Image (tube, rainbow, N blue to C red; front, side):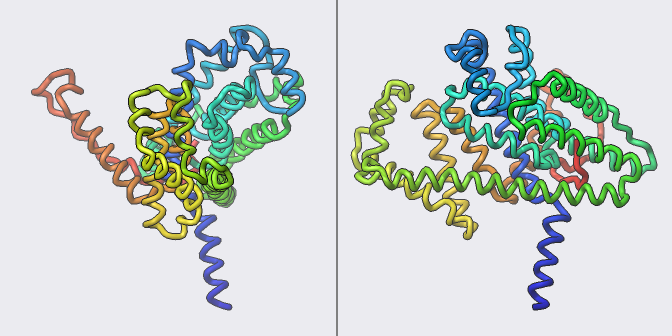
Length: 408
C-alpha cells in the first residue's frame, strides 16, 4: 500500500512539477505552423476563390452554414475584400510567429483564430490534412510549446541572467498584446459577433483572463505562491493537452486502419492501385506507372498500410518497435506527398507524428542545427566576405535548455 501511495505521489509530482515533452511540442508547433504557412503561400493567388468573396461557396451560403453548425469564423464579421485580406495576412503572420516561437501564448491563439476562420468559411475545401490542422490548432493553445527552440526561450534565458545579476527585466510587449486582444474581444462581444459558437469565445476569454493573472502574479513575486500555483496549473493543462494530441494521432490511425480492414479492395490487396490512377492524384504519371506495374508491390503496399495503421497505437508500449513503425509512417506520408500530390496532408500528419519522436533524437537534431548555425555565423559568407575579420567572443547559450517559466 505504501508503495502504491509513493508511486502515486511521484506521478502527481511529475505531472504537476514540469511540462512534459518540451521538444515534442516544439516540433508540433513548428510543424503545424509551417504547414499552414506554406498552404497559405501556395494558395495566395487563389485565396479569393477558396475562402474569399469570389468563391463558389458564397457569403450567404456560409452564413447559413455557420448559423446551423455554430462554427467560429471572423471572416463573416465584416464584408469586403479589405477585411478578408487583413484576416488572411494575419493568419500568415501568426504562422510565421508561431514557427519562430515569439509570444507563443498569444500567437498560438491568433494561429487558431486564423485556421478556424478560413477553414470554417469554406468547409468543403481541403484534403483531409485540414481536419488535423483544425484540431491541432486548438490543442496548441493549451500547451507550453515555446519552452525550447523559440524566441521565447531565448528571452526567458536573458531574463533569468538579468535577475541573477540583480537587474530588472521588464516586459511591456506582453501587457500591450493583452490589452489589444482584450479590446478586440470586448468589441466583438458587444457587437454580437460571438453569439454563434460558444467554445471558441469562451476559450479566448479564458486565455485573456489567464494572461492577466499570470502577468499580475509575476509582477508581485516571481517565486511567490500565486506564481507557483499558476505554474502548476499550466503544467497540468499542458500535459493534458499533450496526452490529447497523442490520443488524437492514435485515433486517426486506428480508425483509418480498422475501416480499411472492412473494405473489399483492402482485403484482396488491390486498394492502392486505384488512387494511383486517378487524374487528380497523379502528378507524376511515370512514377505511378512504375509503382503500379508490379502486382506484388501493390499488394505489399496495400497490406503494409493496413498493418501499420492498425498496429501503431499498440506499438507505444514498446519504444523500439514504436520508433521503427514511426519511421515507416513518416516515410509513407512522404511518399503520399510525392506520388499522390498531397503535400499538406502529409505535412500535417508528419507534424502530428512528431509528438512520438524520441527526446534523445530531437536533442541531437537541435545540437546539430545549433552547430550548423554557429558555423554559418563564423563563415566569411555570413560576414560579407571579410576573411580577416575575427568574430566577437560571446558567451555560449544552450539553445535546448528548457525553461521552467511559462514563456509568453
